[in-house]
Length: 483
Ligand code: UDP
Image 1: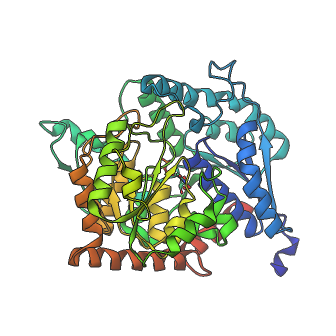
Image 2: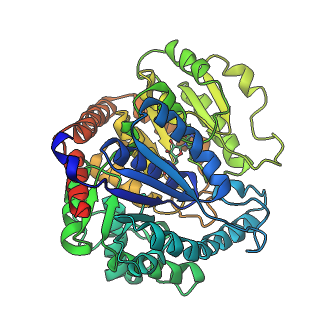
């Protein structure tokens, strides 16, 4: 950085929503900025700081001269009407879905109480900018009081942002006869087909609907948007977004690929419920591109009947698999077909709880990914060059599915029809699981999908290298906010 000596260091504050799908990419982003010479500060609550401290220590040990820190805000759960210590979506594990849903909604609204602390901190520290999560719409106003530019981090890609925008403006769902009748999303490039059951109905009068309106308004009033994506992946949608939705957008991803070594890849989220080295050794014993990795992210739960069908479908497909099963802590195990684990021994591995996902995806034996289409998972799958079985459950995951199946054409849909409110998922039979998994591995179409997926992986890596689209995106962002 020689000639930059006389410049003051850029100070960027990051404020992630407290859920793994938001904290993980934000942590990657903070590390990235710091590795390019900025000072990064991550704002979070006491228990979440414990989650982030370990990967930050790892990063600091590897890069002793770089600056990255955590600033802790109080979060009095009990006073806010939340169970003690529930500072992260992950901590809401009730087996009762109505309870869980109600608590998570309450948690969403409780974060507003962090606003005063944010304002005090901005007043005393005056960072160069604040990259705050979309779920903190009030951060725009807080930052505005002290002339700190507020940027929005949605955690999702351009495609879903554009799809949501077009549906919000044109309301095509109002013109179909039934909620399962397919329609083309107006104005959105690519003639993307979707149904009402799969979209996020943002203009409802519900508390959540009003909240989403506030989220959109805060984006309009913000200084711009930082996107975890790369231009080559969704260029039509990056262009559309910048010309029709929000001019000021910078893409700097895929963020997961900045984690290079074993330690960094293994340590991004929770402690894995399996020895990472054991898991990799198991994969070492498998042929290249022969194993399917099955995961539904950090929030979705399935009912026992659904888990049973997944097990039966995987077994019927005859494919080697690693299947991550997330269950409510108080649930007893009655979800596996009888004798299942015995029968699939050596062929299939079940990880109960948390898997070292990026390590598994990046292993050469992994050849496919059954995913709930969370954006981080999609990008991690793209960066690993994998064809996918798309199985969206909730949030914006159906939009992400359409990108994979209709634009990138690297995925086979399992056939989930409906967005299900409490992240429980639409019921899918074993036959559908079996069929989709087979389709990813066999036949000419499968080979083409795999070829396209590998090409995208190469583009993803090039994007973050010096001179790549995301590398340049970060440069221009840093220049913009340094002055
Ligand atoms: N993840 C993981 N192990 C697991 C489950 C999830 O490492 O067992 C990570 C995954 O690699 C991704 C994030 O958690 O980075 C999940 O984010 P995503 O956007 O895919 O889905 P969400 O959890 O937000 O629904």
